[in-house]
Amino acid sequence: AGNRDPPNDHTFSVSPFLSLGGIAGGIEICITFPTEYVKTQLQLDEKANPPRYKGIVDCVKQTVDGHGVRGLYRGLSSLLYGSIPKAAVRFGVFEFLSNKMRDESGKLDSTRGLLCGLGAGVAEAVVVVCPMETVKVKFIHDQSSANPKYRGFFHGVREIVRTEGLRGTYQGLTATVLKQGSNQAIRFYVMTSLRNWYKGEDPNKAINPLVTGAFGAFAGAVSVFGNTPLDVIKTRMQGLEAHKYKSTLDCAVKIMKHEGPKAFYKGTVPRLGRVCMDVAIVFIIYEEVVKVLNKVWKTD
Image (tube, rainbow, N blue to C red):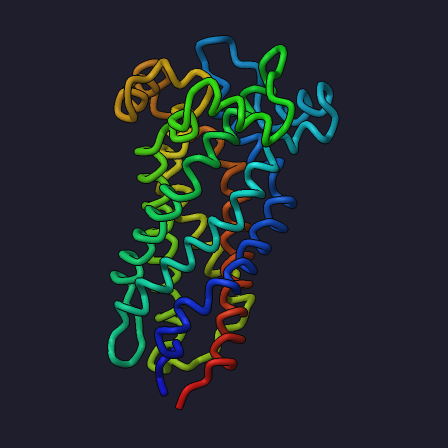
């Protein structure tokens, strides 16, 4: 009975519960969205046109002065509408793949955890993240222009599709696939390694939610330092000035040439705060849901 998972039908039964992961993501985004807003603004704030912001505090101050506290939540709706399907795709694909890759005792080693995470990341990038992030970046970029043209989420999406076609919502796909793939590969690798280390020889050892949270925050931090450069490239490829770049590689080369290596780590501090909280919260809720499911589908 060393198997953590009930039989494979659990893979598909998990789907309705994954929206709980989505709700967790939704609550977490409402708390942490302003840091996401500031991160995107700082990454879009290029050196070429004299920078508008002196740093994190200045960016918050200017936004609140100009648009009130609500200004820090511009673009929130696109992330909220995306967070629920994103969590569902990520954990659904991860569960599906990991059920296929566990050994006889039901254990998943870290290398396989990395591969399952990579699969989950690529799937969420193509299905949910790329269109959602493109819309979010365009919204935030639009608000910082002199006369914003998007009136709300659905109006914005309609305008983007009307003027640029569906391709307009799939800008920076390569960068997004690289970012999400490496993100989830790193996170699930770290999570699987820490979980296996903590359980030692006893695969049934329970993990306290606080421990899961700490592991999640650590996995989040590792992924931020591992792939912030890809995040910066992705943000540029999806902004309103994306036409300046011929491809993902061209964008990387231009940033390096005109702004130096430090530019690849723009927005790291606000991103670090948000990602650690995000990964910790989502993993805790997800793990607790899986525990409940395992009780429901207890098999001999």
